[in-house]
Image 1: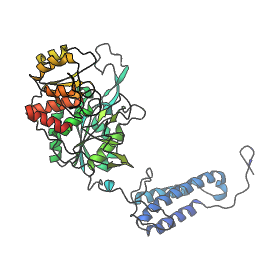
Image 2: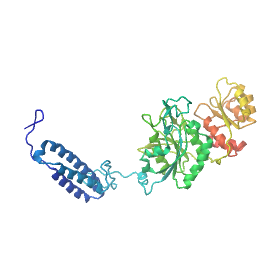
Image 3: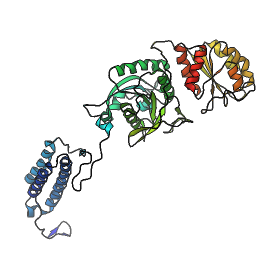
Image 4: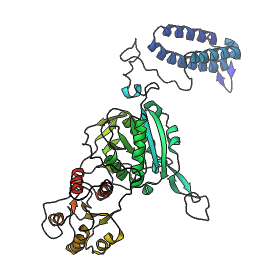
Length: 467
């Protein structure tokens, strides 16, 4: 006979009807029930085969309905059987996730399931570690803003004016259900600001919150903020945090609205690191781009690249491989500074030295009320001779640290003997900061002064921390 426009079909031979398919499916399901855990895995595959056969019957039935006498009632019974068999053991037809088998057990041609990740096993509801997450805002929490919401004054038009921190941390966590496999994540929104607005007072307050979270049972701690000052926040936390529980600081280089947003992956990695045993006792770590860095060494070395964070001259402490943290080394813990919430923090200035620099800023800085100064000197730690009288006067009034503007390497102390060279500056009372850069040296001097360090004790602390 002819069906449609010129498509010829002979009368088909009798094929399997829905009753045959349903019977076969029931037999298979009964048979695999005897296989235990592996049987559960096979039940999923059998049901998938059943659904495919159902589609085949429906399609075939539309062409051969009169020959096989298939009706909607019979098809409905088959579909009902399939759905009820899913519901019988809690399966969901929308998510046919494979069931993990006992390690090493397999039957026939069924491939053995690899052993479960211990970290994921430990993260089941009955035994998931608690990870406390503290959010300060930043790119990781940023979304498109309008001129009316960006504080740009009157006359707003509602047009987009870039991105700004607007997404609550609780919403970020809720959007990533995989976090619940790793830990019980407890979220605290500390601030919602770009990182240029984060202060050292915020960091001191944050430490008290971290202590409280650990007292309440947190095994690990995660801090999210913008990347512009992330290295300074992390270093300050490392100087203040005394506990063995890891503090993992992370953020994002791309907002959630951008293609290739990196925030979710960073947050998952940071939670995994904080929840696991690998970083216990490591102090404060920075986790971005699948790399793990020491807070004292990491720096943001690019304005916008996803790989902006590096540890010049050191490299990362570890990395993530197949979702698991691998720590190749751990640095010794830094001396703990005791600074209580509410302690007034001293003001410390950073002065960067350039070619032909004149002394006017150095002459003025002490009179501006600063309690300390970091001189970001040329090369290994050198300044023009014209600055020496102002430096002498400054050293007599406040502590002055000597850093290098190069961004890598250790400040020299015993190499150049000309006026303004490293030997001369150390002899004049400037304290070299070792491998610290100027921003971290400023953080160290601020917190050390707040903790009561002065004179030789201060110089010894700076040398210990700077290395």
